[in-house]
Length: 195
Image (cartoon, rainbow, N blue to C red; front, side, top):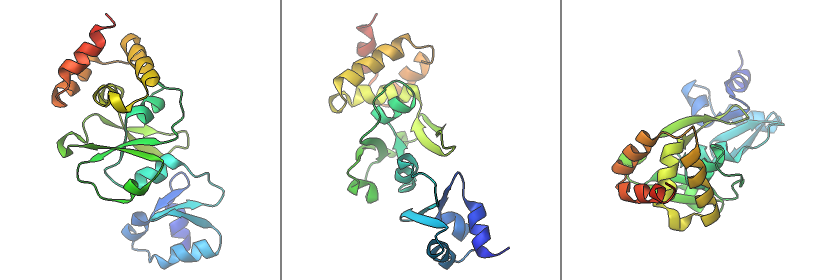
């Protein structure tokens, strides 16, 4: 099979990253040839889409760092606990990160200790079929309590109330995360008010 066809078969839900091409020992020059033939498009460094595929900002931003995890109000939106479509995407990243996400105007970065970065991470399937990393609902609630001053008060209050009455909540997990994040009292006090 020709290299160009091999590349076209590597696309997942219309997306391809350069790493997939190099892992299959295909010279990168064939990516350029496919662009010139108008079969694929480069959307940012290392990320390509097939022609006529809609650009998904969630996929693009996460492809810029293997440490990027959607969090806070963006995760609330994905979990259905906020109806505000993100204009700026909340992304948690490891402390000390230096990279292209810092230059993105539509991103709010939240720096997290390396040992806590993967706490509560789940794979989330977008409508496009692409998989992104976000925090589970209980970790997201801990995050918005921790970052309350940076969160819109209306979104915060709505999410806390909805979580309190939700069948999706896992209180055990919530307090386990809160202890690891050193915000146990803050979390407890937030929910005491609703009792």
